[in-house]
Amino acid sequence: MPPPELMLLASYPDWAIYEDALYAAYLETVAHAGLVFRGDPVKVRYMPESKRKGYGFWHLISEAPDQGNRDEDERIPDLRRCERVRWVAWCIQNAHEAGFSWWENERGRETHVVIWAEEHDFAVVLAKRLTQQGPRFYLLKTAYCLRSHTIRKFTKERDAWRAAQKD
Image (cartoon, rainbow, N blue to C red; front, top):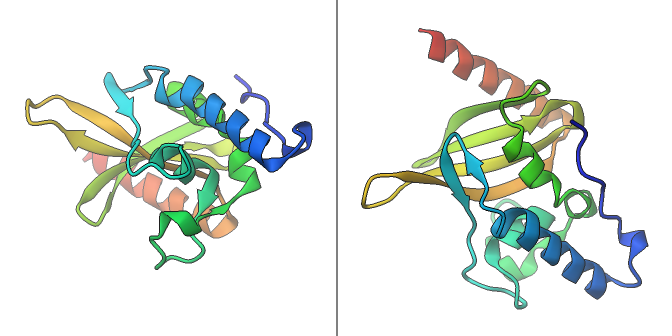
């Protein structure tokens, strides 16, 4: 199944209208879509809100100016991420299909799930969460286009996780 059509900035009269269209697409296809991964719901972070838009949205369309900068208001839009905002749901919904890989990894104290649309070098990252009642959900962390060094890293990580699952 091909990915959804890109949302190109050139199709909109200005950045503000484009940003609002991206947010509407995010709300429709991700935040309010009832996404499920491996039988558990996928949720998004709304707080802290920034510029009247939910926190999770900004992590799908922008990146930090540098690794150490955690100031949400200083994130820089990434047009490749913006164009692919509708791809997030597509990746989650098709994670078990040919052309996609998914695996778990540890990042600090969190267990993440990486979903990789291999032919398109695009990845979605979910964090596993347990509720106080027990059932889990997945929290959408981010999504981005992969660079060559990340592709090499992901290939090693995925293959090692798969090998460990067979033991």
